[in-house]
Image (cartoon, rainbow, N blue to C red; front, top):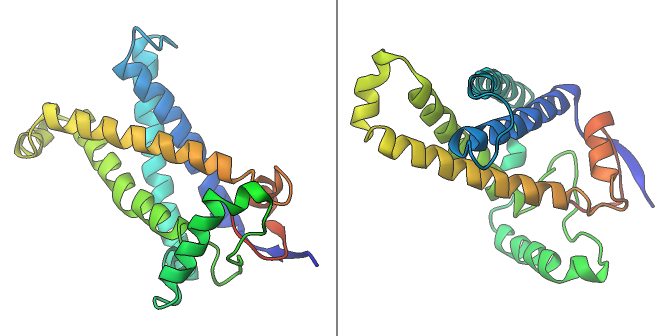
Length: 209
């Protein structure tokens, strides 16, 4: 029997959608800056301005989200509740994504208010939020930054290192975005998870995208 749970508080939904918009705009403008002849969208200066502005919005929203997750204790969702059970649950989730999902089987790991992320989402989201995002932000600031950052840039290998690192992270973000959007369609209806992230209420009988 399905039930409605207030799964996503307002701060989390705001953080999620602002982050999504920023990442999409930054990917589009970033690839446009890197491949101006292949992806001609707007004038170079306009694209550069948009990339910088949304970059700083992303930084502010990241700080806002981190404060929200720490203040509410929701940061716990990024980490397993039971380390001993984690390998077994991860195997269940792998089986579901590679086999069960195509057979219409129910999600093997129940999504609850105490554990919103499944065993594969946890390491994926942790890597994105706590490793890739900081690298992307720091490399972006150093690439954009004023002359005062020159010594730091040189210490880290200069533009020949920073630009490839920034681009590699962008490709990883794009891969994550594609996979994330696909997995949001695996609820009991194609828009169930998207609706939940808009309203905060999720209809669930267990399971997790």
